[in-house]
Amino acid sequence: MSRYVIPLVCLFLLVMQGMAMSLLPAKLVYSDLLITPHWILIFLFIIAIFYDKDHTYHAVWYGLMFGLLIDVVYTGVLGVYMITYTLIIYVVHGLKKLVHANFPAAFLLAVIGLILADALLYIVYSFVQITSISWVDYGLLRLLPTLAANMIFFTLLYPLVKERVYDWSEEISNV
Image (cartoon, rainbow, N blue to C red; front, side, top):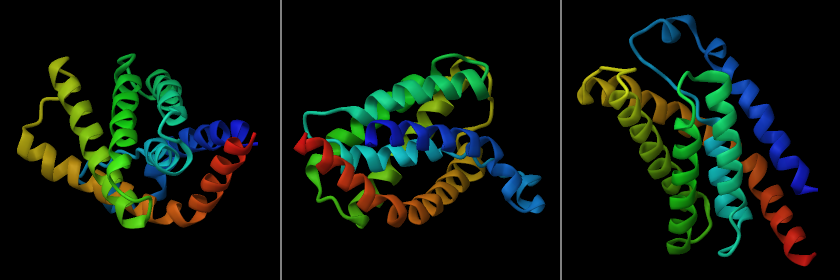
């Protein structure tokens, strides 16, 4: 069952990610703040923490596939999100071995992963000269608002999917 549900949820989040800015108040959208929804990445962090075992890398493969879809649908540079999501989910998958799988640990791993992913995206886009804001402006106007918005999404998503994801993991283990 999870074999089909996880990609469908990611596909739904891909569509919703594009509409996320229209859900925010106009004063926030048209301000100097740049908020980037990373909803698929947040969901895949939960998959990496609660679904994947130490020897399975389903979240990494989903990160590769849906990172490529994000590149195709939303960006002009092919491969940036694909490589970033894959690499960061792999790092979070490795870091989960150091902590217990509970809300504070998952929240911390999501914060670390999100900061790493967004910073890596900024570095790549700076390197190819798509963005030219300074590190200070990036930190204040993009990283902090993006981190805050995505962690609110994580806090809302976590109780909805954590038990289901864990049950799917047990279902796969028993097969």
